[in-house]
Length: 231
Image 1 (cartoon, rainbow, N blue to C red):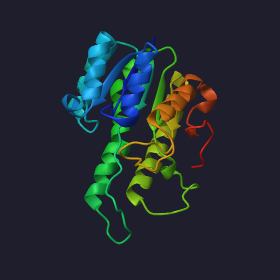
Image 2 (image 1 turned 90 degrees about the horizontal axis):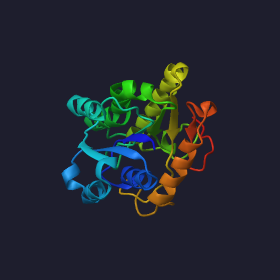
Image 3 (image 1 turned 30 degrees about the horizontal axis):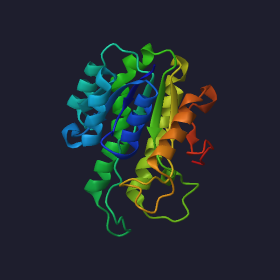
């Protein structure tokens, strides 16, 4: 049984990570900004007893991150899934820059994931084979950008990728892996109705990647099918 911490669990990919990890017997700490407004998450908590701890977690809040670390306590954390993220304003047109929205998107998508890692480093260091998963997007790939636009979201995910590579380099000597994952184009509120795969398929594929990860995957930008995405 692994101990897993997941951010952004109110719905979609984060909630499905909770479901699948509980189904295979893991111990899960699930953060959501307003857990009381997440009936599916709370039903899972009622059904799984002390294997699921749900707590309020706005990843940009220092108080919430400190509470997360305190709640986890001295338990080793085998897997940290930094899933929480926002898309930013739509449309995001050239000539109409929303500076405040851009900065807020960076706070959530780039700065907070690093801060969550920092908050849980003592627990990660206690695990036998710890792993950090950063939920990025192929839209953060400059090599894959053929359509332009989406300046705010694209740049935030490219910056998150840079954070992930630095984490991989900095924590390599401690045996902590960092993987940067593209979940695919997923049928969620963010992905929209035209997306290609379900959350169940996406999360199953990402867990397969995480379960099979080795030192050679450290710092890789990995597609949902396991292939490497160009930066």
